[in-house]
Image (cartoon, rainbow, N blue to C red; front, side, top):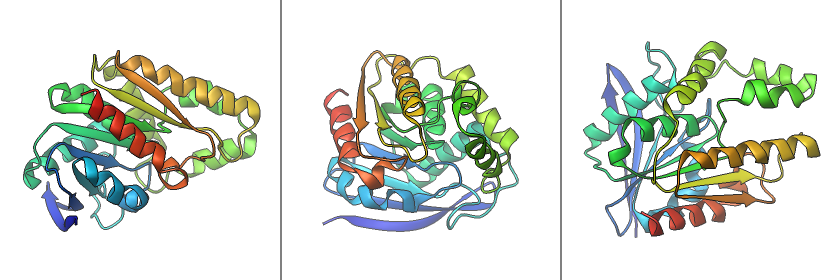
Length: 244
């Protein structure tokens, strides 16, 4: 039987919603960071299955889900700072396995780069590459590009989002031998065959972040692999644990 508790953590006067789920093992702490504008509900299908391997932390970043808005910049370095403080207040000690979906992948990469000694593993689920705008977006249809630029109303601005990608490019050169799994979607909606090939190529390029890595392609998944084929996220967690 798992035990779970919900708590609001005060960071700089802002109440952030957290849910901690404990199974048989207290350690490692498995942190799940959702995509841009998304929150903890994105992980519900997989969280209850992954507690077999440790303690799971789900949380809503500021301004999303049940968390209050923050006056601080909505850039990755600020989000990592808030996450670090949140972990300390919840007394969730390292080692951490960080799982980031989409934009959440930028956040967890930055966390691993800032705190490598606390990071036991990294799992990037269809994560945003820092060169997305320059190398990928131009091959997509005008309609897709227009929709892409219009989405930046939920969590920070387009400029803040691009600042986060810049931070990843600046700080996330290598995480050494920390176990890394890239889980990539093999069946993305609205992608031409050319775009799908390019996307998988860019996901493979993220492998160079670690000398200790694995690529998993979810053949029938769209962007939300943790919903479409959650077994690949579980497989990634197992691999990381066996290579720690």
